[in-house]
Length: 304
Length: 274
View 1 (cartoon, one colour):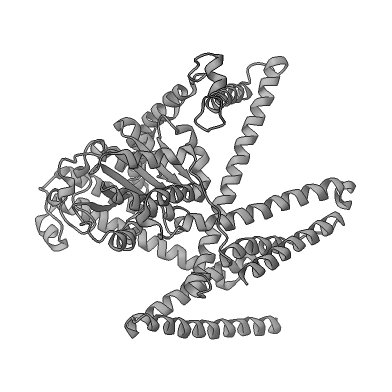
View 2 (spheres, chains in turn yellow, purple; view 1 turned 180 degrees about the vertical axis):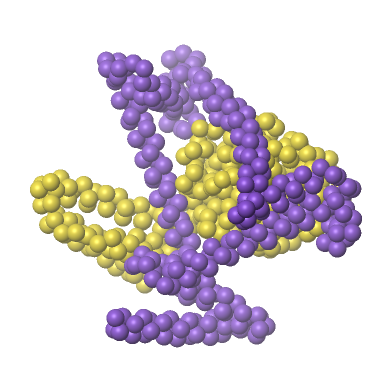
């Protein structure tokens, strides 16, 4: 039944595109709302009929995965939530799977945020993922959320030499010195891996510039697609790996599930989003083709 | 005009009725999960209100309207208030109070870290910044602003110079033949693997030619003709491909956000998908 619905939906989209092509060739205007409608349909159909594709990690995603996987148990990994709810649908799947991977490998997880909104998103991730999937992990021993401090890249500039100059407590108001996880941790230089998940300012770029490079600490990232192209020049020497957009998240999720039997039933928001992505991109490509055909062969194009 | 007003009132009535129906329906849904009645009523309202705001924003795709304006203004107001509250608790209470007053530290339940007079400098600069609201002594805020601009420029200059200039130049010096061990080894190990010798060598050539031609395109002290002109044209192509890739990524990002909202509508609100 769902296959029938899918076929009918795809036929409607296909027929609609054909109708658009004919109208365009006839030199008639296509209203922008029609375009919105097609994009809406192209995104909704795969969601409603659960169309997904298998993903394989590309080297830039695999590099980040391998780094976390190959670090010795008990390594210190810092994950920074540098995003807000407006960016969350795209980058939240990255932080989710990273938290699962880090804790599944029994590393120490330090959560923080250079965005004010990152603090509550980090707390929400603790409630949803850590308390749900890792009830045995103890706050302050296995993981800690030290939250947000104002100052953007200035924060990094300070904590790359000393955490305690800026962070007196974690988000729960507990003195950092009273937390076992902070034993022997003075600055970012004591971390084995820094990961920033975000897509704006401050974000992955600032982590490379103000923490990874000066502190000589391995740095990786997960970035919203909009800013991912600006980060690729840092790979592989200044940034060991990157998840670029939801495609990167989907690749990481697939790689993680392939190797961790325990999480075979975990939610895969990244992979689920790739179905709508694929169909939406196909429709956009069809629009570009239709636009060009109508320009070169349509009545209006010939007149101009 | 009267007809437009009637239509607006009709739409408002429909929205109110649909909102109420959704609230009741969602409340019932949460009751099934065994949650307390008070909580389910609240959650039913929150989910319905979130769906209303999402649809209000989407309504801008048709045309500008009061529902869109309401959602937009609410978002701006809530965001501003949120940032201010988090700033107060994380920076003022989290950083300043523990360094200036034991009594206040006890009041706010944060550990006292010993008195440090230097922490009054940012406090004074912050107060000076707020003086901007005064028309008479607003000029004082420029001193704080100058401090912010100066320190940020100084910090960025050093970091950009290191990470985005020196390191990036260094990153461009890549071997044009990767792991060369002779033709025999090259052809026997030939593969299209992304980390294989052939692909890595080709990637390095793309970086070399791309950077070289891209720089030539921005070199205006010599006429772009002959070899120089050809390289400049390749540079334009490299830039165009870069812009295309950026646009493609932007499309992917925007579609992801749309998927996020539709997932909320289909899953959390309408319950159409698992």
